[in-house]
View 1: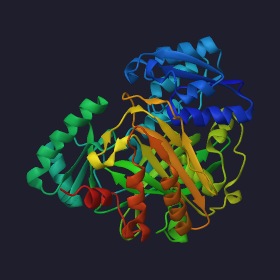
View 2: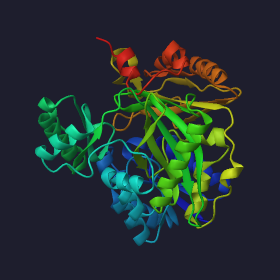
View 3: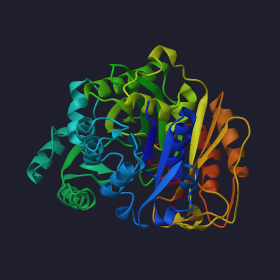
View 4: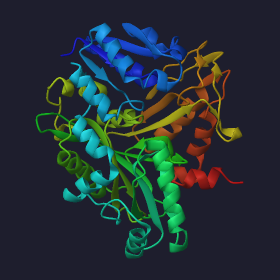
Length: 448
């Protein structure tokens, strides 16, 4: 087992890893920027080192500074969390070449799955359903026109190195295809340094369903069931729940087994997420693999009864998973609301600033993962998420009721948060009836 782990991240995920380390008897090392000196992850870690100024590019994305902190602290391993360098294969390699185990998949697996076109090929080879589309990257407008005609309009143009909706365009007809291709390529090149794009059949009003998986280096691959992440605003997830309430047991088993085949086919070890879109007939299609722990991992932990961070650490030391697939039973319903420092009444305008007072909710089945506290100043330099409110109850109806109660209890004064918006969503008849899709929030709440 590792003696000391450096957490190459900030905020609630850094605190989440630090807590797991403490319970496992492992010394934790935090890194922080000038803007995060007072963050709770810095205060609760056993050691902490400043790695730069406020901008991410000058701190949390500085590989040399992260490695220097690992060397000075004499760490055994690095946990990247999510975001920042977590899916950077080069960082992965540098950690291992410098003598620090990277708590995640191999750099090779990360690189293969990080390219969506390559990941699609792996999916096809392992009989994982994919959306009808191009066989590879689109090299010319003529090839794009021919491919689009074969799969049928509307088509979705996607960046091979994309994420978060960047480098993505919908072409309703051949007349707009060339312009949409150019826009997607330019946006992808600016955002990711890679302008490669491919085409897929556009699936109207899909649900976004993803499967949590974890694999060890002994050939064991397990899924922790699926999550419904369809409540999104502009491709950014807001609310997640596990399991998906609209899948039959047969479809649940099919999508989870497909995720396991995908991970086996990629020769992947450690935690990851296989993402799918599900159409109105409950047919599912592979989207991508996130080669890291994700924001929404707690809902899978709660329904499966597994501590994913601890399993990540054990797997990275070469130990087998502490359970088999047949040991896991999906119990109850878990819901997570991302609490962001944003004002939903002003178009979700960011709301950094000093938290004057704060009361975190509690009670049966309530968990609040957050690094903020009364007196803490939320910096303007990073993602606006300041916490995750999570509930776990025996039924979906009880989970919704408990979450609405917990949202009402959550008191954060001095800044605006999205808590009130989540309550509106949870009380909406279409959310209660589970008849939403990934564009539902944009249609229902972004009306002119």
